[in-house]
Image (cartoon, rainbow, N blue to C red):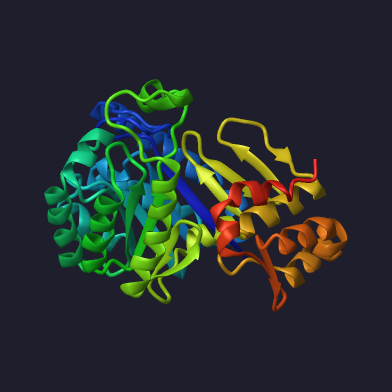
Length: 365
């Protein structure tokens, strides 16, 4: 049986955050119940496909999956286990927001096999949380955190966001240290991106700046440097551009994305990659050309601090990276943006600073 990752999308939230462009929205209880019923039907639809695979990770994302009632989450997992063979050691993650879980929900998660949680905190500063449009305070996060630990979860991620309105380097450092003191197993530290179609784009897009200002480029870069320095003090290593973990607690599901493992997305707007075909739920699959597969191998793999294996590239494509990207590799290495050592190509610290530009060099079309 081939390994397969499952992503299950729950598109509901209590309230849309001001920066969010994900497929999510508030919904009434009846809408949520109807969606769960349809989702279970969709899962079971893949019964024939499932026979060839063993599921090695499940990630329930959103939205806010923890908004579902315990019985609804149980129904989703029952459909998954009825349809797929889930490996005994599978990593099974549920995303959640502070204030949306209680003891009953958490004990239900444990019972149905969830062994990893991802909590969306974003900031330990209540003013920053308010400006982001979050539904919770830091104190409410702490209540959720203690419930999670009391329920026996020992593989927990906390999401943090830098470069948010009104944030300073000092307040970001306080957030990092405050969260690291709690000793979660994993911390995701992303920089705010202003996306079209969001309230933040109306306020800050195209160079506009109304109200609380965004940190400038120098401040944002310093926040990025301080993230690595501070989290290393607390025993976290960076294994991907924006992700830090204690040893052995790297997110296996996300590593699969960056390594182009096969994954099946189920639910509204969920994306899939199987047999070198990509599609989003409700759309026709698109075959990836050999060149597109090479591009993905490089710009996804370079997100990992370990970089991309030249041997694996040759195994997959029947040629060396140098035969395709020789001039690019030489130029980026000479500029100090790329390292070529021990059979791997990886970004240097300088390369990580300008990672989008570096990765664009590996596009073939």
